[in-house]
Length: 256
Image (cartoon, rainbow, N blue to C red; front, side):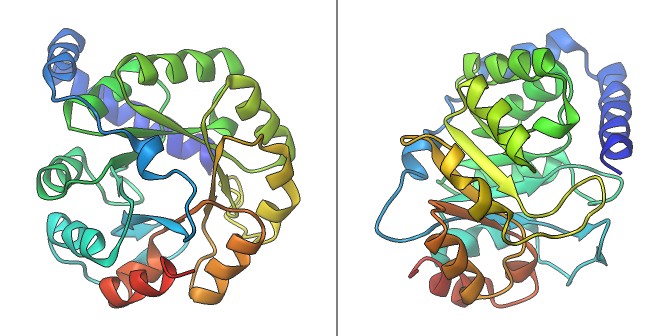
């Protein structure tokens, strides 16, 4: 599944590149207003930080609840206390787009994450041109040399890489990379199976000073408390916010 998702995202990026050249996107990226400081926004605090996700669909669940305009949902997230907003831009299975990201960026004042299956520099430039402050890098999807290169490009453009791992070995690769923001995804993107306890088993491998993000398997406040007790500084939540009152739900999460 992961290989298919990455291949599809790269094919779609290649199609966009035929219409909008690398040099044009690079120029737009360099001209964009400076990225916000996501590390400061997500720094450990006395309460849980939340990255709230604009998510239309997923391969495991299909279409989720009908959502308002992405910018309106993002504004509700900010009002509810989110520290950052994640926007899925993958088109085929998650039904997102860069247009969603651009609309969200214009509507809120907190950092915005481009969440997609990133495999080349063109996609990173697209993210910056669209206003992204963070870009997701999935360790399992990339050889280490490509991971290092993309991590470097993201930082050179002033953005923050969120480096996502799904195992102890992948956490070690993220740490070796020098990542300052490491996500541990309870959902294995190869099988889409969930393991809510994965974060707790690998959290100690993430050095002090690195922000630890727990991703997936958050359906209620008890799940947020579970991750907080395991050492998470932030959680990334999508489905539970899209399918419930986003402001009220967020307010319970950020109180943990």
